[in-house]
Length: 300
Image (cartoon, rainbow, N blue to C red; front, side, top):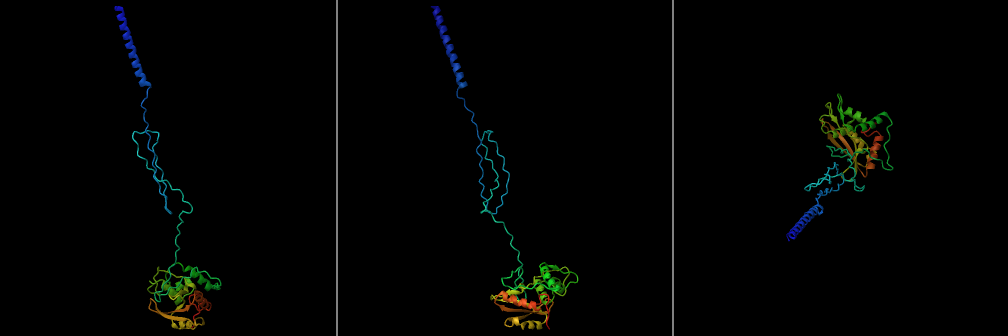
């Protein structure tokens, strides 16, 4: 009986050992091959690119190099702030939306205004001949060629040299020197104190003298011509009796020079259009009666 009792105890112990072994083995297998908690991979948030406004016409966009963003393969514990990217150069605009290149405004010569008579002669530079319009004859001798050359050189200011007089400057610039041309120079240089004594180094503005510059439009829409400025009124009266001016209003206006002398400025009107006024100037020029051009013959 003792033998069977001991045998039962051994069976029970063996069974307990087997159960304990199975329990330990099962627990080991459970933790070894069971579901493991996966390590979560943190991915950086997507880059947020700023919206670049479409450039306006004529707006200059300066290209800048984009900043280097962090590599997405490297996980980070906390989400990094989005990288700020600089605006890239904007795409070229369509042909219709491209801004037209800015053009520099053409530089115009301001019209010369007379202080004495308040006249505003129009500048005839660059005027084109109309169909059927009679053009001025080309210079035939050395004096007229010098006058044409002088008109072109008179576009730029000139400095007074030692020994220069205002008449010498007029002769050098226009090819003709008289009170009519000097009157135009004095109008363009109101700061001249004494035209008979010019300081050396003074800069004079020499206006252009052309046929068109002697015609100007009056307030009533009609046209007037400038016939000349003379030291004596006798020649002004002579022009007043010219056949071309027979039915026209010829006005003789005294003008006081800066040196105190009295000159007489002569204008004629009223002409219905500019072409009629130009025809009078051309006729006087061809007959040597226009003091503004070479070939002028003074009548006694």
